[in-house]
Length: 77
Image 1: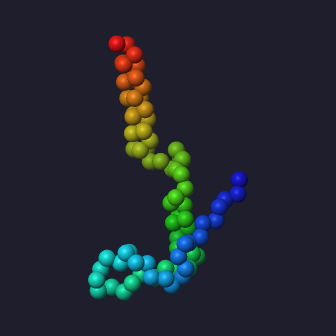
Image 2: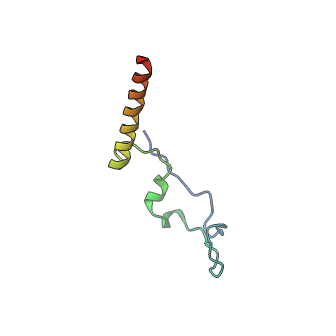
Image 3: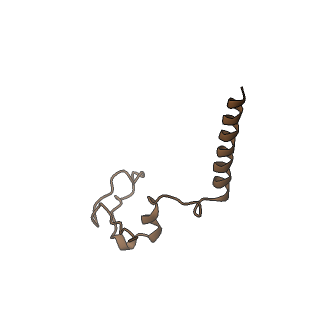
């Protein structure tokens, strides 16, 4: 499967309105895609179990077990 190459929707040098929340600072300008860190382009990729932290994984598994338990309890009545 070919990996998709993500490109920015904003051209280099364009002002990024709304990102600068300090009144006395100049506008933040968009950079060239190569100037951003590589991890930035992976933020929208779906997570896999390998990328999930232990706490999140345990929470997900516990939630699944609780749902199964509640389902079984509702069938006993």
